[in-house]
Amino acid sequence: SQENLDELLNLAVQCAKEAGKLIVSAINKEKKIQTKTSSTDLVTETDKACEELIVTKIKDLYPDHDIIGEESTVLNSKVHLTSRPTWIIDPIDGTTNFVHGFPYVAVCIGFSIKQKVKLGVVYNPILNRLYYAKEGGGAFLNSQRIEASQCTDLTKSLLISEWGSNRKPERLKKVQENFNNFLTCPCHGIRSTGSAALNMCLIAEGRADGNYEFGIHVWDYAASSIIVEEANGVVLDVTSGSVDLLARRVVAAGTKKIALEICANLVEIQDERD
Ligand code: LIP
View 1 (cartoon, helix red, strand yellow):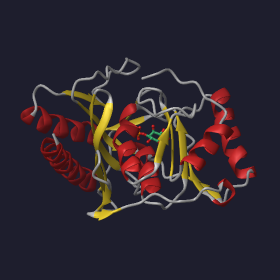
View 2 (tube, rainbow, N blue to C red):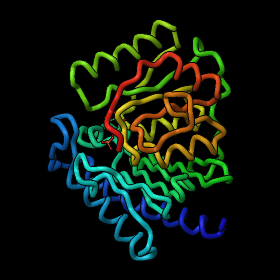
View 3 (cartoon, helix red, strand yellow):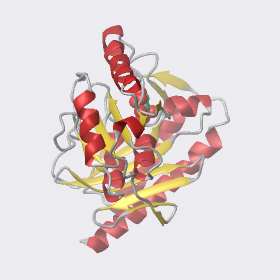
């Protein structure tokens, strides 16, 4: 029910704010850094502490809900996203930024039923930007309604994408090919914040017109996907079909036209599904 969704959204906002406090208090200090799948895929004790805080709070109130968390997912294991009520959590999206003190980091909390995202919270505690949305309720940034851009011309668009943490030469070549395609299109520019979730929220806010990324995980784009949709933006899979939460790739844009043009120009990069 709507009422229940409001309650869950409140809980997600509370969790994000508390985790945000941990991030703020740790970002300027020395960090214990570990690597995950490669030397450019990082995790810190703060990622883990934030996830634990959020998971504990949710389990306390909703012990029968499922939880998918970035740091509690065993490396290279499959994610089990079922039709059951499921929380999808990235305690720090933009861990590399966090490590360097670059201020684009976000706590991401999404909630899905039947594999459909019902609400999402993306919180940047450093820049104090709280984005949230629930199904049918519009999208908000710090309590103000946000709207995606109306741009329909790729040659007049500002795009956002990322290099990603996977630097295998063959793969990186394709990432570069995609940057080249859009730069020679030419779009007005391509930006990278280092956080897939904040990139998508910039689309929701209408600060940029289109975004794509390969190699991300369900926790990087579940919460932000509903924020883009509720801001009247468009979220697609790179095949131009509907977004696939486990496909490890996403296209987001203010308009369907830009989203489809991005899809049409992309060289596909294959990553193992979540
Ligand atoms: C990050 C993504 C970013 C991507 C990085 C990394 P994390 O997520 O949000 O867009 O390019 O490689 O995966 O690991 O900081 O949560």
